[in-house]
Image (cartoon, rainbow, N blue to C red; front, side):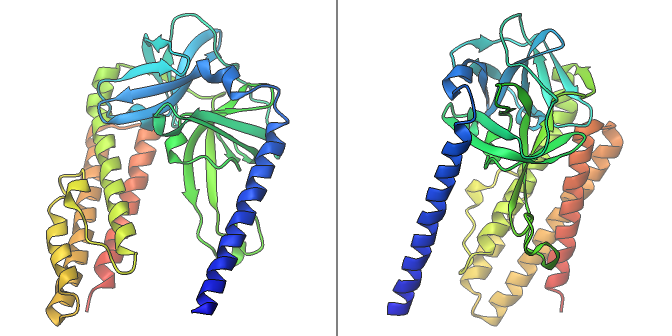
Length: 341
């Protein structure tokens, strides 16, 4: 018991030391910026729709004023509304999508906006100013660029999924990119001792150099946005299920928390199997439920492949749907093969 308490105390001490080191580093980076969150909040946007909220920002590009956000924030959404943290209601006049990047820009009436720059290198101080989960709650994160690619920047600022759509700013207050996605890199032997060892990696799409395409939003969202949003919900539901199953002991699944109709009936058999897991029949039922989940993943992947062929998806939407189909097919194979006799 004493050893366990000592180990817990060491863990808490290490966590507190890491927290203090992180806060000190944030303050050190913040001192390099000649502006504050309050100086740019009137250009930060809360995007609301019937299913939730997201983030965006106002910037000037090629002499015009735009609202920028990620495509995945608005795809499949209905009842969209846009309001800055300064209280201005925005009414976009048209929507353009970047052909190969997860960015959308919405043309606005004339007015102020953040400047945009493409001058960036490695180890450059950056700030990610936004609102967490689009809820109007200010988030102020600092870091540095750790990688520069043709279309994306990798950064150390610890933004989370809910911050996607927020601007990536340099020390002059110019936009370098848009916070877009997070990747989780598991530990591997070939990355031991490097900066890529068992870490979370964060990426921002560049704004400059994108190939913009205007779309009829109502038609595009019906034909492409709604199927895209459906696929996102399915993958997120599956990942949530797997997260609960990886806990010990495995957690009973709340069917009401599952948004995808294809998955909503699955928890009945799984939950029953968990109750009887100590019985031989319970183990067999558990195996069957895993194989059934694999079959559902395979079925959804097939539906995605069919839609991709039929509807002539392009650009970012096509790339992301193909990635999701690949993921579901790999997961289906893993689930089905893992429980075969």
